[in-house]
View (tube, rainbow, N blue to C red):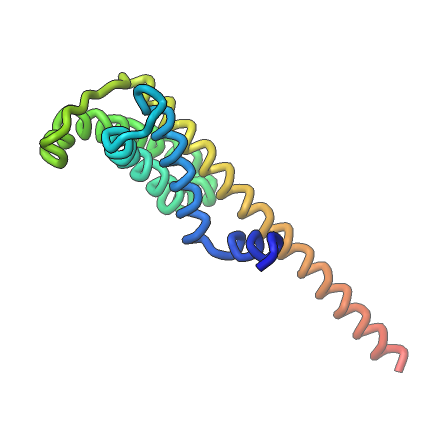
Amino acid sequence: MTFATSISRISQNRLLQHGLFWALSFYVLARLFAYDGHLTAVDWIYTFLFHFSLWLAVYLNLLWLIPGYLEHRKYARYLVWLATVLLVSVGLNLLTFNYLSDILFPDYYFIAYYDFWDILEFIVAYLMITSLVKLSKSWFKVQETQRKFTRLEREKLDAELGALKS
């Protein structure tokens, strides 16, 4: 399989795109969270727990807020719900590290290393990246549809002109 074929396959498979995005995210954040630069089980578990709030925010935005509000030009409602999703996601992150981590992984000791504003920055960055990707993909689809429509109109006019000539 060539590189171009691989890229084409990735660009057509949403599940694969999401999997690659989250795998890269998981690796980058694990490296960021690693205490001494060497990844250990604690770093992987911490990264996994940290992703709960990211997954919640990103998928609520991609699957509910953008199609339900932003694409229908309901900007005020979108912003209100986005702020709500941000607050809930930050709350989930704090809840995860202050309480749930002890229940899920009792053999490890986790703390909420980041404060409210740090977590908010992480989540906002993820929302911006994923929203830009989704909106740019939509823009490219619209452009492709317009090109097809223009081509079909041209073919229709050529067919009408051919019919008139005959």
